[in-house]
Image 1 (cartoon, rainbow, N blue to C red):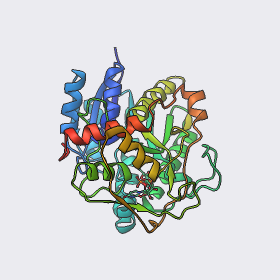
Image 2: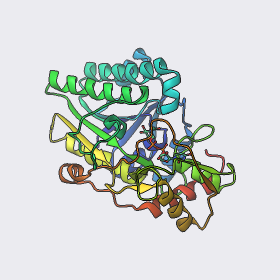
Image 3: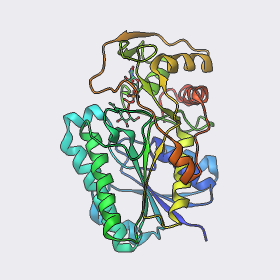
Image 4: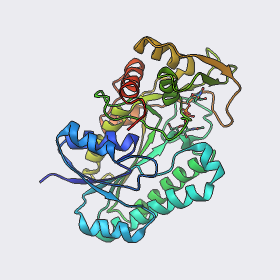
Length: 337
Ligand code: UD1
């Protein structure tokens, strides 16, 4: 009998891509999502693409009774926990909502798991927990520092998970620190569908390409980097989704707590991404160099060696594929889902 995985936030951008990989790897998938920042159409499309069913629960992790009920109704073997609010700027305006939703929701989830004896979890953390890097590439044992309430919630959840693992050896926990996920499934049927004007680079570029936004502002051209613009480790969302399967499999070895970067190890500047997008799609992106965005680090990229060694996982798709797939999704779905 195949294992059943509960995917929290499974209707979202990364969650829906993880659902495809799980179904294709032979797992059964149960999704819980409150749809506050996603649409259930993503799951219908995953079902169409894979020819397999997803059991969907419309519920909020902040509702402890709903979570208990879900774990009584479904027989869950492991959890992949994506659900959470993720906009850095917004988190500085409504920090309490971020703390309640991300930390409170996770605490409820872990309580419900504990009650039912489900003790395998993969958690979606972020490279934001490294704060402003002093040395690169970023290794998992580097010092951690939150720079904003969003980052604080990721760091706090990491600490909760560490405490939990230390308190009970039955827990097996994988913390995955994502770098900058971009791109979309090769089918162009699922992808990133941000509400309103995107804050992140790639969805902004695709909206300029589709004609919905006039021009990209490049936040800062005077950084101490080769072309003056910030450097990030962009990773194809399908590579990222696959990393979760490797992490899940590794939990069967009962590793206790493990922490891994999911990045390519390769940094690209904002101008590199614009040029890569233009090469991959034949579209021209209007942009202008604007002032720096508060809180941006000049360069961030992963040391991916530990994931390669311990999870047998390595990102395979390059920047042009990331751009081509992001555009394929956007051009087939100009208004999103
Ligand atoms: C952001 C979050 C990070 C989160 C990640 C998720 C911040 C400070 N950090 O990372 O915590 O985990 O998203 O993907 O928000 N850029 C422009 N013009 C734009 C948009 C972005 O020039 O309109 C530049 C940024 O200055 C940055 C790069 O593009 O150098 C990437 O930005 P973005 O996609 O927002 O990701 P991060 O800021 O790296």
